[in-house]
Image (cartoon, rainbow, N blue to C red; front, side, top):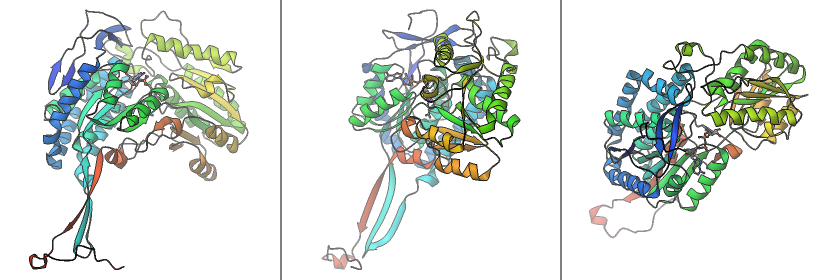
Length: 506
Ligand code: NAD
């Protein structure tokens, strides 16, 4: 936190008005490629939360009553605007997050797919009906919006994770309050501008900033109906408990420790490339990053040799073209903050002290302005070591060596998380056993990052998710709607004394 005054304060959007709110405390927003402060996020207070939720609640009735086809048309327009301003959106992601432009473009594409999914929502919102379910009685079941929905999002996907929530929530007829990560609030501001330009009525989408006090005020506000959270596991669990204790429906996605199983028959060249992309993409700051390679049998030595050889040649540098002309050729950009770089580096010391072998050390000294740390490979990682159990969230790939596929499956059974897991093999039998039995919700077969696209749910298991309905796909629609069943009987006027007891076959 700082009280810098020379940089712009990130605006909030309340009831259609952009406001630069004063706050007692601010969080600096950095460009991780330059190490410079580019904005400051006001850490809002409970009074602002009440104001923003009240504004959302005021916009709700008219929006919920707007024909779904018209609501969906806002998504068609948003899709068009995102296409037109695609490069600007991606560059802003790179600027405030540090991922490479290629990674930022991939992120924005995933966000666009969520908008496309939401644009098709009229068909998915159609209800069920069954005429004459009892004599003269017709039944129907339709979906209604739940009300004011809140999204609390992490720093690692500044554009995509808000788009996991906002398009589906609002096309379902809800009003929305987004509380983005204080580390990357600028992409959320741009999203607010785009939604406004797309024709969304004022107050349907709102933006507020802040830390724990702000989140607590949102979780306990009586007019908030639903909360979507994505972030680390301890916070996800706390959000789930507090939100549900206050009567909200909550979906809370948490952290991960994703296993990558390498069978001895895997194509090692392809596998090494896929593993490096999985572990070091976005500098390891992905909830679906492969962080624990498990080499089965003879796969161990060639895997570690291949990984070390491939990874040490990776081009690590500032990723923002406004900071460095060579940014477009960078394979891996900086991590989010200097403190995070130190934390990631610390895990290499911890792993060494716990008895693992640091086969490739990505530390570069701290003399650069950018928050850079290169790829690391840690070999001979054993169960129970901190590096085996804790989410590092940086470019560090652990390698564990086991004898059999059964041993690899057991590692999954003992893992507290359960986001993704991947197998590299040419054996259909091994792939099938793995797919059926590994203890995680998103499985890849010869696919490094099995992150489902918009049409499928993002199905984290265990302590990677708290709640029951996940983001994306039909589950997302179920989360943002509640069902209403109607039973109707219209007796003939001359039978107004008809028996009010239903006549069915029993
Ligand atoms: P984080 O948990 O620190 O922050 C997430 C959000 O919670 C932010 O908006 C933050 O302001 C807020 N927050 C932080 N501390 C809080 C507190 N004490 N009380 C209430 N709110 C609080 O996470 P992060 O560092 O921004 O993001 C990285 C984490 O997110 C990693 O653990 C990663 O695995 C996870 N993640 C998970 C998924 C998934 O789908 N499972 C996707 C992306 C990221």
